[in-house]
Length: 112
Image 1 (cartoon, rainbow, N blue to C red):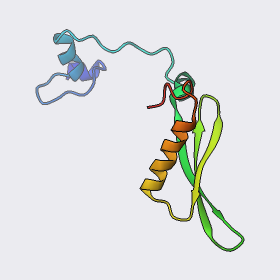
Image 2 (image 1 turned 90 degrees about the vertical axis):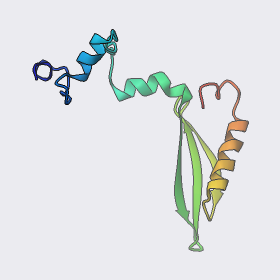
Image 3 (image 1 turned 45 degrees about the vertical axis):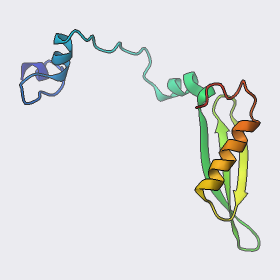
């Protein structure tokens, strides 16, 4: 129980904290990060982040259309990938493939 009181984490059934087990095994703790903010993480990783979402548009003729779009976080560019009345996995996959094939090679380096 003394390890838990010192801040080494919860104590398991054997009476030792996980951090103590790692220390005895010769594994050092992870280094402290200088910045833990989500904003700084996104800025550092922005070139490789491609966000995707779908929104709907109701037409004058009372039909609903779904729009698939992508946002490049690094450049903040928005790409309209496709519009359809019925969203399917095959349609969304094909739109993503078409978009990635259309981007320059320099902009797709960090995207996986």
